[in-house]
Image 1 (cartoon, protein in one colour):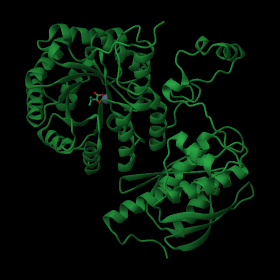
Image 2 (cartoon, rainbow, N blue to C red):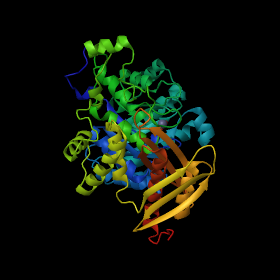
Image 3 (cartoon, rainbow, N blue to C red):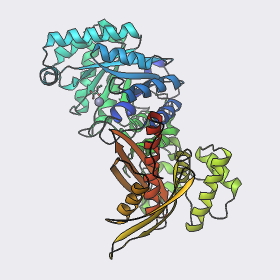
Image 4 (cartoon, protein in one colour):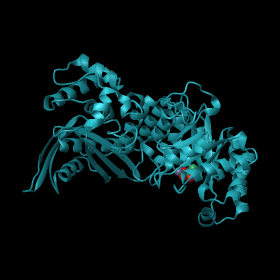
Length: 522
Ligand code: KIV
Ligand code: ZN
């Protein structure tokens, strides 16, 4: 079996269009902050993703600003913004992508009978007028225009052909065929792409794209079927994030094309060794855990438990592994860390994990590492990642957790006594609550009065074992704005307090940018 392709013909290149920051971010609970979107975009760009759909600029000022900043910072990728078939949307999108070296406007309209009638109450003729008008307007503002037929897979074939023809005539350079509701079967989807290529005049001048949702678990299969039929762009999202059951998972599409290059001799420009990092980053910023048995990036994706499998893999990895862990960025750790590890080993480990810290941040991280190694026999890479991520995230924080004592258990009442370092002073408060977490959060709320609502509280273990660090995610919501904070510690309550304070710091920083005299308790 051949696993690599050596001949890289441009016509066989599959453009990887990532929509984690648009379709992905649109799904309930996956909202990301401005800084988090920049971090994700930076990694996608480094990873060799061809097109980054950075957001929907007309949707909010925040979306506009993040698309604009990503456009400013991108080194390689085309930066794309989404726009409905409306002049205001298209103009705003053009403004947002303007700083990009290469920018794209992606405009769409619902073409199916259901969307025409119930979403817009328009007939076929009006729909065609809007396709032409929107694409022409976008082409007047940029040379790279993508047009999407929303709900294409439930659109009458003849009408879809006329829409695609109108979009091509108006100047679309990419035509995207979304399976918006994840309804298509793989053969059906491939046939649809084939039919459009055969019937629509000018089809050979443009790139066909797939955008498959995963409602029936077929998003990746349908995308591959589209590629097999001639599509040369796949729209996907890291960890399969997206509306409802999500989009085709980027890592699965890329690795399927890469691993089975013997089936379809196509290729992508993605550096597959960054897939695991991207998955972890997206999971961290959205607080969406990755399913353990998720293909490519799940914790168990390369774990062999049964005796027969372990025996086989030890004799020859190929017996039960069709791709290597290294090819997707899972590293075999070379340095095992513990309480005897010194500064030099810690610095080497950080380098191995891809961190570069300044002197002060390094010292703070080292102190925390030593404290952790004192209570935990094995300090795994995941422990160090959690610790350093927290150190980086809290570098500018006004509030820090100095100490916490909690009384918990069946007897009640549960109590928390917390000391917070706020600006330059220490403040202490004792609160009673409905459980230790509630008591801790009440105490923080008393010291830093705020209106924010707790929208998410999530606990997971960083590694295995009863001495594992807990990683807590807290999401606070205030004035329709969200802030997500994370905290880790071997004590779940301390991790909870850190996570809450981290989210609060983000809200306060944002508030301070708007009104510099932000209130804090004295
Ligand atoms: O699923 C869909 O149809 C979309 C379009 C906006 C491309 O996300
Ligand atoms: Zn979609």
